[in-house]
Image (spheres, rainbow over the protein chains, first blue to last red):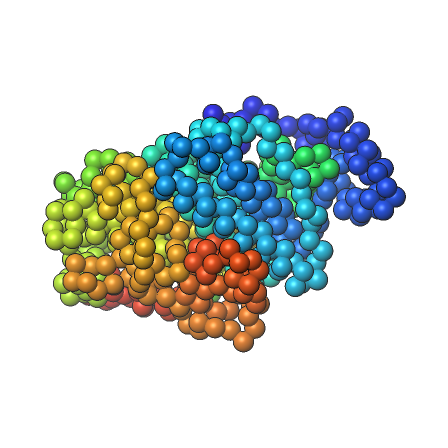
Length: 272
Length: 336
């Protein structure tokens, strides 16, 4: 079972200029774009000039781009939990009332995030991204293990995404809003991880864990200890000690695109 | 240019030179620049920035940035010493929960390491005796005094300890949220990202503490699958629902952490879209000027409040933290 994006085989390191889906994408892009003249114009309008992945929709630039990026992620999460609620595990007889309540809450929270972001985009005269078409065909919604593993992937990804996107926001009001959402995603992620593997609400796949050592002077702790992995440039997955492994938008979307249907795959070329 | 000679000369001229650059090297390593390739052409610039790090870092952190990071460091010490002390008290934390508390203690130690790295050698440090974990503002006799006493009234299975942990980590996540906009300057984007990466870890901790508290009530220790029980004072959801019924209850019936879930100052703003300028309570249902309960009939006030965590201003954070500060801590200016 994948425990994070990085451990999924289809998400291995890709060379940035060699998108995984090029042959299929290019064909489906033109099929999609060629449907009608109007659709062509719409899709082309969604592709920025620097787009190196044919067939992807770029989220745009500036605060508007980040808000649309968040809107895309929340669309995906909301669709995922909506599908859980009609799936075999949730509707079956083995699920506990407590877990059912958890999925009910998660579905509501993510739908609220999605609708809020759309409303916020419109209120700021920013055109929201189109309704995305998810592709959850790799997930067996009848299996508790698979449902929880996928939920963990989405939640951990959401946290890393918001954390890595904050720096690109100019408006502090937008930063504050992102902050209000990301901690709720972190609560979700921690609970799902605890449900799957108790006491793993934080682990080295999502946090650069830290092992403290005895202080030089007993009782006077000045931060002595060793991080699990060497801290590196922010956004590349090795933050400082005790910190979440934030990821930049292109890195996130590379993984997220596996759950989006052709025609709904995304790029974020302004936020490398 | 002979760097080794230069460093050696500098050390002669300024015996503290290596000490000066050491904490900065931590900034270098932990806050983002270590991965940058140094080319020959870049050497003079790198050298200049090196000296800037050695002698000018504190000056380059503006007073507001320094204030946010210092408060964060103080809150990390509050948490670190609490968990570290608890881990040393035999019989306080149930065996199934020791690994989780250890993880949390270690994360806080990492946060102290990171924040001290940014603030430099002038950063304050605090001892366990600088805090009053009874919640008595220095009297040592506050409503949470049983939280570190195994099996004391109200503290079976460490119930009060976990209640306090929930209150501390929620205070932390609200404080980081409130401070983040101050860190959002072109010069401090890496510091902002580090703070965001700490903020979400505090929220993960908080989620876990809440799961443990549900498990204690349901007698299901070692599992996150225990049911939440309204009004969520003792068996909360892993997220804040409205104001969680006022937060955890102390043995005397009081709710010493109620301010953790309440509004800050100012609680409302003239421009409801300026989300960084006011601090509603956690039962807030309007974001960016939109009352989200009006969007869909299933979006209850409870659900909407759960979907967003609210920031808290520094003054309110300090007023909460001062309940857990001893006379010795106050004498050092802790949370003042």
